[in-house]
Image (cartoon, rainbow, N blue to C red; front, side):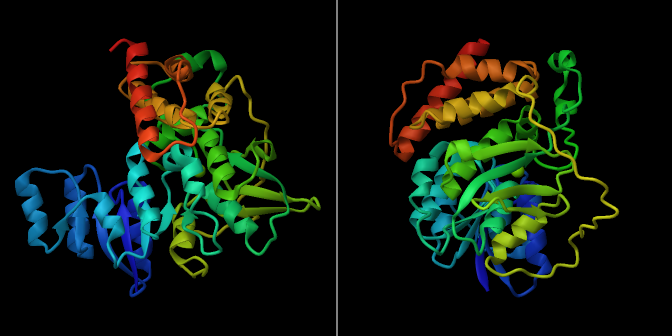
Length: 376
Ligand code: MG
């Protein structure tokens, strides 16, 4: 049995990971569960999966309740390094996923990576673990997973990557109305059901810029060979064009359990009767549109900043995380998200070839700048 630690077990990807694991009895032993909040849900998960280790926040009585179930509290870094853990599902949102990801890679573990901020912030560092045929990182995000699947069995004669974007909930909203949209509207994603941070990033298309950054580092493809196209149906999850002009696309109905399962079993494909199947006739037509830069200013802003390298992308990611929190708490409007990010980090003094602590320092600085700009 494969020993698995699930970090972020109470979030959308974490819950779906446990769902996939349950579909295959005898394949996985859940050794560790970690979550920042939702103590009630993690208690239920502990009761069901009986992990050795647990990492969560709660009162002493609540933690004592978990201990009675036979698991030991520990830090996430300790959990990912446990000798019986073969694979870490990194499903924590945001910067909190960075250090446990680096710790797991340093300990030689395979990391199924759903957290994209870790790659955005520390792409250069993480890329140093990617040089073997035995991949240390198994992408879980649907677009990098699609690229990964398209590249399988190919020599790396890639002409370009074409990453698809649904366009989010405001793809057809008149531009003049965007200033007024509420967090509730932004949280209503048309095709994917995800946590709040990534859903807001999907509405601004910051999420898509992060996926371009992810693809650049995970697949070693130059920035100018990565394109984004809007594909509202979210059936084609991304495409790879090879040097001869042939294009491979990976298609499936939008259900994260498929890329999760692909990463958990890689290199095997497994039959799972609970996953929905694509049918070309009933699915209707697939359409594509170019990305409108006026509608999604975060997209180009993020790429311009990320391409500067060093600690710039870490500052970008942290500023975005802080700006999204401010939007969700109605402190700033939707169109202020890119303005606040740009204003906050324009004076960043980057560190080139950064260490983990350089990256965390840049992130802390960027968060402070966002709060200063918004006047807290
Ligand atoms: Mg995605």
